[in-house]
Image (cartoon, rainbow, N blue to C red; front, top):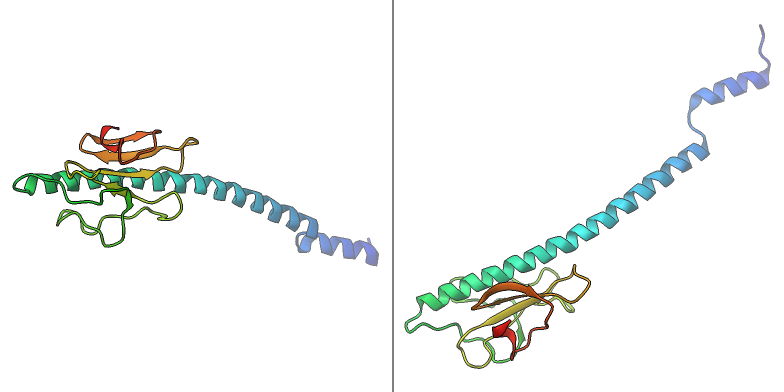
Length: 159
C-alpha cells in the first residue's frame, strides 16, 4: 500500500518529538511546583532564624552566669543602663567573645541588652519573626523564656 505525501508527513512528525503545547504545559507545571517549594522554604527559614534567636539568648544567659560565678565579689558584667543594641565585637568576659548578633540584624530584629542601671542583673532579648503577635525571647537571671510583653528596662528583670 502506498502512502500519500500528506500521510507520510503526519506519520513522521508524530514520532519526532513533543508539540509546543505539550512543552508549555510541562514548563507551567514545573513553575507551579517550584513556587510551592519556595514558599515552603521561606517558612522554614523564618522558623530556623527564630530557633537561632532562642538558642543565642540561652547562650548569652549561660555566659552571664559563668561570668557572675567567676567574679570576686560576684557581679554581672557592666552593661549599658538603657536598652542598647548588642554591637559587633561585644563580649561577655572570656565566656562569649564575640556575642552573637541577630541572624538578620536589621529592623525589629536586633538583640538588645541592659543591666537596668544597677549592675545587679542583666536582661537580653530578641523579637521572634514567626508568631503573628509580637513575641520576645528574654534572658535574665530568672532564666530564658518567651513572652508577648514587650521588654523594657523597668520590667525586663521581672518577666
